[in-house]
Image (tube, rainbow, N blue to C red):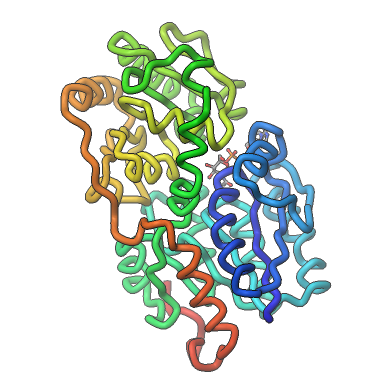
Length: 369
Ligand code: UD1
């Protein structure tokens, strides 16, 4: 059976690798789980392994934080000898973080097929580091697993071959459904004195929102105004904690683990966020979400989910929050967000590895991007 390296580096990767790992191993593949070490704090890392039942990584690269270039270089320098040593049949990367890009670049140059889980998403905002990571990772990948039809359309428009593109569904939602009952049994609401359906949950961590003090102040002002309507709970990411001024009306809590955070989302009346994955989880949970960004790489959560792309103007955020609070919540979920994306990915990848010449593009991988 093939040997496959599966890469995880940062918090949003952990819930995406788990269903792929399980689906590959249940079909007999030998999987080496590699943690790059991009995220390392207990709150950003350990709790997710425990909550998800993810086994400790088989290899840990211990790269840590740094500038984009430093982090990319450290991951590449540590990953290259591992690829040389293990000689994998494929490298699977997920999402859009720095580790995703760094490992696909190493694998592509080593001549190892790359599979990208969550391919084809585009915000078309080139100032987002994740957008650069997405576009370049897709270009380096042999197999592109899109979570939704918009991802497939983006890849086709960029000239990728049809036999590279696979509509697989959303692995993050596989993990959500697999853990929902355990999450709903959490006592996190009780610990924070919250009543189901009567609080808002907010998250902020994107550099574009939290690095500029004026932008952050405007967003906090909007959250404070929402807090006049109902309690607003804000788990704080390390990037944000250092920059957070005193703000009235918000209930700051430490970063939540996976199960607690799903429980907090599931019972919220409203979620306000600049995260990518939370746009998807709220859609699957049928909880209204306001995305505090000017663009989204996940438009399906707007057209077929519960998300509203509201931007960063405080007056608009407050007005939209008031409107959403007065409307009944909507429940609709995109096709193939059904808990089986990991299985579909494993089937395609193992078929590809069994007959690479049949499924692999005969000429250059991908075309002009
Ligand atoms: C990364 C991802 C982003 C994801 C986010 C949250 C990229 C380009 N961005 O951004 O897509 O939404 O993670 O999961 O990869 N830090 C700690 N402890 C940690 C990790 C980081 O304190 O365990 C601090 C460090 O000071 C570090 C800073 O947070 O410099 C930023 O971490 P980094 O991984 O570089 O990027 P994120 O902003 O977390």
